[in-house]
Amino acid sequence: MRTGLFLTVAELLYILAAALFIIGLKRLSSPATARSGNAMGAVGMLLAVIATLVAERILSPWAMIGGLAAGGAIGAVLAMRVQMTSMPQLVAVFNGFGGGASALVAGAEYLRTTEATPALDFAIIGVSVLIGALTFSGSVIAWAKLQEVMTGRPITYPGQKLVSGALLVVILLLGVDLVLVGSAPTAETSIAAGALGGGGGVLVALAVLSLVLGVLLVIPIGGADMPVVIALLNSYSGIAASATGFVLRNNMLIIAGALVGASGIILTRIMCQAMNRSLANVLFGAFGGGDETAGGGTATGGTVREFSPTDAAIAMSYAQRVVIVPGYGMAVAQAQHGVKELAELLSSKGVDVRFAVHPVAGRMPGHMNVLLAEAGVDYGRLKEMEEINPDLPHTDVVLVIGANDVVNPAARNDPGSPLYGMPIINVDEAQTVVVMKRSMRPGFAGVDNPLFYNENTRMLFGDAKDSVAKLVQETKAA
Image (spheres, one colour):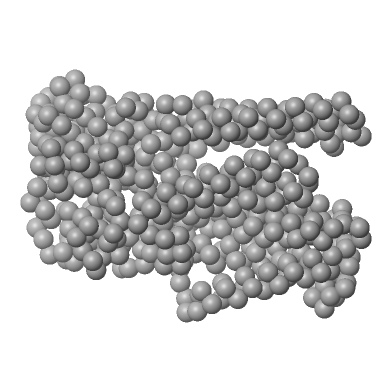
């Protein structure tokens, strides 16, 4: 049973946890302080969990210790075993767990309602279940696309938007019915409640349909838009948590959920701006649905010029300025450590080496930043698109490693391209462009890249990790 002392301690811990969340979130805005910001957020969450367990006293001390130890062990194993290249999938899973937990907690709280429970509580429970279940199933689909368990290309069918819209209307009507049923899990004061076995049946139906809606909303979104989807689902998980906080009358959960929800929406907006597209276009545009051009550039009809590792190493070794543009190909090949070694070698030869990072390169927000930071690349060398573009006309060599759509000049020059209007890194303006790719296959957008056929472009085919290793050896000898 709760006492005044326990509640006072819990409230103090909540205040400290909230402060840690806010300060930690602020520190996440800079690569130089992101690690400490993440640690502060983790400590804040630990304090919040302990405060809740202390205040509610729903577990014995030994059960609390056992649960925290088990959860900590699982987290430690994930941190050590999950590859950096699998971070997008892990983030998708975390989003799903957050949404699923919120839906389950709201459902459990519904079972405790009585005839005297206010209608507003039922409305909040419905919102929490809706958003939480949708986030869970949508995140599962996002994980499956990222993990390539299912195709990463958009899955569409006739009348898709109409079906999703109709399903959402049915879910909202069930939510209204849940509030009208009002009183308790066994209430049967509406036609829907009677047909579904009481108010509890209405909530179960709402949850199931929300799970289906989550699937339908994510399957038409292609791999090119995964960074936006991950940011949006992250926001959903925060909104669901905040709604659950209102259900539980828990201020800490409301604050934490609101922070996650708001930051996720802001990040989603930034991602959309980086692609010059609206959120509606991302969610309903089925972007990246075109047929892939697997051959040697039949769509453009240009001539491909190749470089050997020796040629590329010599060009970079005798350059004054080199810019490296990382993409998902670098992540897949796990070539980030070799890239760092190459950058250090060139720097030792007096070459000014910088990295140009596009906001949506990879499959989650900040994907390239995370990989380069993990390899130990100096933060000062990482430049954003807006900062590096004015310098590219004065750059001797640009090395593009597995990037495609984010360096496609069609986004700037071809009104008929699906990429048109998307801000890109203007690598084609450099004196020489070396593009490392496995083949001539297009990127996530499924469109050909005219950059590959420019006179100042040289292709270096092969696995990025092997190619970078050869570049390192040749640079040492140059």
